[in-house]
Image (cartoon, rainbow, N blue to C red; front, side, top):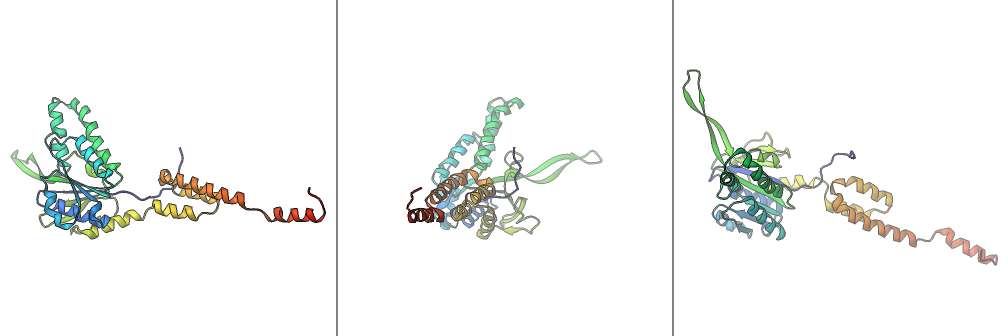
Length: 296
């Protein structure tokens, strides 16, 4: 165990967009993605919404992976890996609701197992593997999720039953938004959004706004404020001492997997250069001994 100074190295975004049908989740996700990459060819959308992504093909040449039932966690994981293997920088999953509530999704799997409480012990690990695939992806991930109005039947003081509205509820497993960097809630069909969860501090306690490319640019700028591999590489190449390399290794502990090979390589270069340097005494002393007629 070792304590070290807290630092935020360059991170990958995990963004969520929730809202009712027709509120602009897919469109907003694409604008966010382009703001992050500035390159349509590096954006892929995993489309479970009846090829709705094709409605926005005029925006740019992004890639589409159409995913059909069964919507099992494993098929979502396979789709994510396909996008990663194609070196996509931003992967949009539109939507994750089907993994939970769609045909072949977690709720149906649970029901087919018997629908008992203990059957969740077989379903939950499969769902968690899907969440882990999102959190551990090498690219930025944007997920969309459908939401519905949440109601309950309560009794008033006179014993009469009344319907009470509790706002909106995302149609996925409860607690998903806590895994995200930012979760945007689209609140009407005018595409107005607010942040219901925000680890960046960029959108907290701010008025509703319309998501656009500038929103993505703000988020990628926030990412790049952390320590990056490129920044580490530049400092390592410029380093001229072994002690300096030790300092850089400590500085970039959050990126040690990427930095360690570069530091070893630079250390080898520095040691080679040092071994080739001939000191002044090594040059002067032989001359003096030659003048006195000795070789010792």
